[in-house]
Every structure is written in C-alpha cells, then in structure tokens.
Image 1: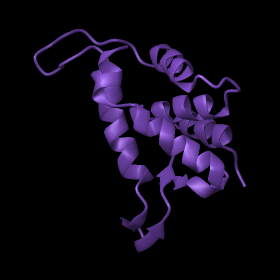
Image 2: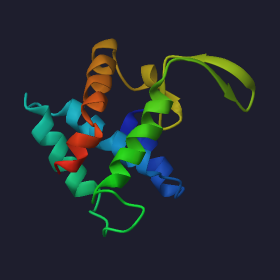
Image 3: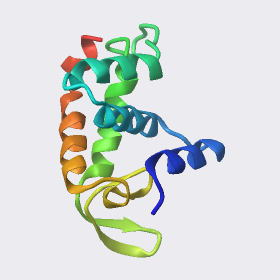
Amino acid sequence: MTTFIETFKAKAHSKSLTAADMLALCIYKTTKAKSEDKAVILTHFLKKSFSAGQMAGHRLYPYMAITNAVWYLNQQLRAGKKWGPDGWFETEGQVLGKELTEFFTEEEIVLYREITSMITPDYVKGL
C-alpha cells in the first residue's frame, strides 16, 4: 500500500501534477491536521499553494483556479461506474489516479469529502 505523499511525490517527479492534485494535497494536509478548526487550516494551505491571478475578462475573482480545480477533483471523487483504459470499472472515488481506499480509512474518506465540499465559489471568493 503506497501512501498519499509517496504517490504525490512520484507524480511531481514525473511532472504530471495538475491543479486538482495540488488541491488534493491541501485537503489531505487539512485532514491530517490536529486542529479542530479545519476551515482556517484549509485557507492557509490554499493561499500557500495557489497564487491570486490577475483580474482578466475570463476570471471572475482572484483565486478562480481553485474553483476550477474543485470541479475537476469532485469528478474524480464521484463513486460509481467510470470508463478507463481497460473499459468500464466500479470505483468508490479516486484521487491522484488511485482509489481513495488505498490512502484513507473510512472515517478519513468521510472527512476528506466533507472538507472538499466546504470549498464553494463563495468560500474561494472570501480568500
């Protein structure tokens, strides 16, 4: 069983990280934090990992990349049938290209999904 950090480092070494992977790392660190105030910790990690983009015609607010990454990450976390290189397969949700159950216990999966659901466009606009 590989750990989340080992998988993340391997992906970083192969230069195939995406914004959703960076967001997944922020949520992972927030999940593992000992503090009970997860929203403050999440805000800290997001501001450290993402930079505020300059306002342009296609950008509605400075940290819009986070909102786009959340949309992509939510697609990965969705359970059910998905299409892959070998055809259809059942999944409980994926992150970093692997099943959630490879990285987390059932309680951690619930917390991970709960923290992910906290990141709404209104939350991101408040950063």
